Structures are given as structure tokens and as C-alpha cells.
Image (cartoon, rainbow, N blue to C red; front, side):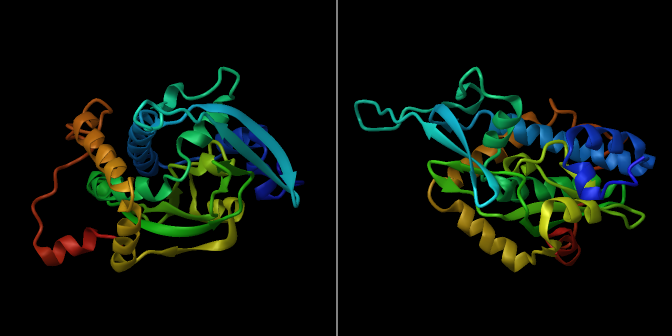
Length: 266
């Protein structure tokens, strides 16, 4: 059916991507892994919707050096004390803003945040299925570039790498929409790198590198935002079907430091 097209061509076409996805089979264990990871992604997006930002007045499209780019104009209003007036992201857009553009802006510049906040809980949640989770850094080949406040997003990107019990590797990308890819959030690693990455490879972050990244994210208002995501996780994980669900997620016994290290970023 797709003999006349390369895989990147298939996955960058929404219609072909949908047909390609339907043609793929996923074993029950992997399907359950994806379902659980999807619960964390749903929680992340729901929390991102509550982040405060200035209203988006307009979104302007242009082509620059053969690359599709979108630039936003944001409302610059302040209260009597000079504090910027902000609203929840979910109501920050003009009515005519497309659903995909809303998704892209909602998760803009939050890739590292998603990994830092959710990776330890995700590791525990998938342990019963024999799956492992690590953080990888990828150089993205964006379908479009998005700029808020006139600043283009850098293409270096953090994602989850999920390795199933049978050794298959998948990329779970909670913020892929910011680069113009939709419905690409969970793909085989080789497919993801072929379609979405500029270099065709990814690099696993060591515990030391991850610690440095966490410090960088915590600077400025990042620490407050990160704390908000963590609080949302604790308060709402049951509502999203994560806990308690003993048939799927077993609460692992308390691990000794040497054993616990194996659950950290590698």
C-alpha cells in the first residue's frame, strides 16, 4: 500500500499516518505500556492547560529559508502594580485558533519539565510490566517552528525512551506538538528518529546530566511551575486512573540505595 512512499512521507501526511497506524499491530504488553504512558501524558496536558500565560492575540505564519514558522503576538497588559495580567492557557486563545495550534502552544518549551516531573512515577508504574524508562535528548527536525514573544524554540529536545520487556524501544514524547507533529507522541524509536529527528539518533542522559538539566529548569519561575506540576500529579493521579489499580500497577517494595539507583536516569 505504501510502496511508493518513504516512511517519513507516510508519517508526515495526516491521512497516510492514520492509515499506517491502523495497519500496525501491537502486542498486548506493549499496548498496555502505551495505555499507562498515555495516562501520564493526559495528566501532563491537563496540568499544562492550567498554566498561566498572557492572552494570544494573533498567530502569524511565514516561510523563512524554506521553513514554516509561526510567530505569536501576546497581550501586554499589567495591573496597577505593574504585574502582567495572565489567564489559564485553556482560555488564552482567540476562538479561531485551530485545535492543533492550541496543542502546540500549550506544551511549548515544556519537554524537559515533563520528563523531570513524571519519569520516576512512570518508572514505578511500568515496573510491573517489565518495562524500563530513561530520558533521551534528541535533535528535532521540526515540521514547523513556533515562536512565542519572538523567540524561536531550540530544536534540542527531551523525551522518554521506553524499553518493553521484550526489548522493543519506543519514544514517548509529551510535547511533540510544539514542533508541528500531531499524533506522533508514541512511536517505535527507529520510526521516531527517522521521521522527527534531524540526526537520526538520540543520546541517553546520565544521572549527572539529568541533575544539571533539573537545575537549569528550576531557575527563574521554573521551580514554581515544576512544583505546580508535581502537586497536580499527587492530587489527581487517582482521577486519571493511575492509582490505585493493582491489576496493572504494583507498588514496588522499598528499595535499598544500590537497587534504587537502577531506577534512576541512565
